[in-house]
Length: 543
Image 1 (tube, rainbow, N blue to C red):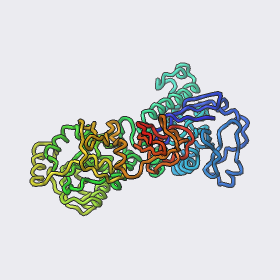
Image 2 (image 1 turned 30 degrees about the vertical axis):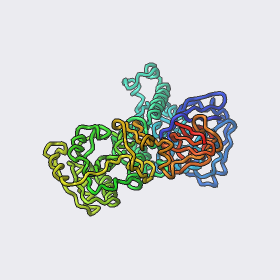
Image 3 (image 1 turned 60 degrees about the vertical axis):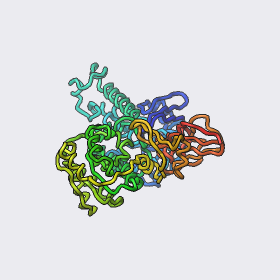
Image 4 (image 1 turned 90 degrees about the vertical axis):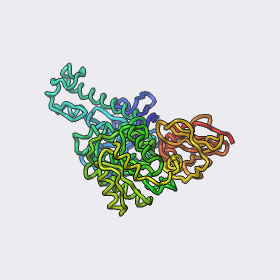
């Protein structure tokens, strides 16, 4: 068997799986008897997921020409490229906590470049959750059972068979009055839609909408979010397109938690900034391109460090406004922030101000953002000054902000330093480095030597070879004794910094050559996989 992963979106993947005779594009619904002939003569292995290890080991089963049977309570014999089968996974939906615990257990002890098969588990209403959990292959058993029960399957749930004639669906099965054909077609369509969202790096957005009518699926999503360390390691540092934060769960997304963690643990504000101004966010991203923020910046005149208060990210320093997800999120704007939202964001602000001391903090806010700032001040024991209470972009508020900053000295505009500290966790000396270009497409040089540029798609800093010389450690991938002639493949990697995630800028180091590029895998998968691209190389320099 062979499995080639083409696109990742967290645990979800698209790819190509084949057994030497048949090849399918994943995720896919397949006829298991055709793809895995050995399943037809399989001895009993359909034991509960909660079965103790003694029983699980006793039912150890080898399937000739078929998937590798895996269980949470036994060792895993799967190898790179295999397909693993988790029997009875459909029963896990009834206990969301166990669903996630079993999933994490299995994922951590299974090679990351294996295909995952969930027999008898896939319905149009559960496929998004299954793919988000990292499953790739499904069969028709579950929908055929629904057909025998007289249930009409849709992506939002099941209805009595009478729905077949109500015009809900116009597939050939519905036209023919054939419930079985409709249910199978509904499953195929939903898998095709899920595949599309994976390719767009927006499966989370689809999941948040699909799971709403099933409490267990909502709980599964929430439990996965609580496994931050596990989820964050699989998520790219940037995605294509917009991150739509349209539900309360969006605040717990691993991307949002990672932004906050790096803000509070890595980010270094300008050293000469002792005055901060808290500003509201804007619908347009990056904020600096909006009319309101142009007015804010004109009134401030560089005399304070600008911090944007926003949901779901909490706090975005001006230097990080282009960085994913700060420059890529969209959120419903009502002016009202609920109690949970206020508690989370005020906690972020309080932790930030406890870590970074300012002589003065001016709140140029209104509504929910102002309420959050007041709560954060109470928690952290800081004193806020207020330059407005209504319409921060209005003339009166802007004049008040200008007056509040009268006599304050200008803060050095060092966007690069803040971005480098956030992205690489490094306190880089940026003296003598100047920017050129038009925001947000900027290039940074010292003299005639270009050091860094900004990737306008992700907001990430791209170091040149000279730029990497200023970053003393971290984000290195070490390779064997060869000169890359293109992308670096997994078999050539012998070491990777544990902090590296999919999409990170990395420096490739070998005895014969060095290279700059972007990680195509997180560090853990680079070291555990046996096939695929590890680094998308941009430039190579022979030593």
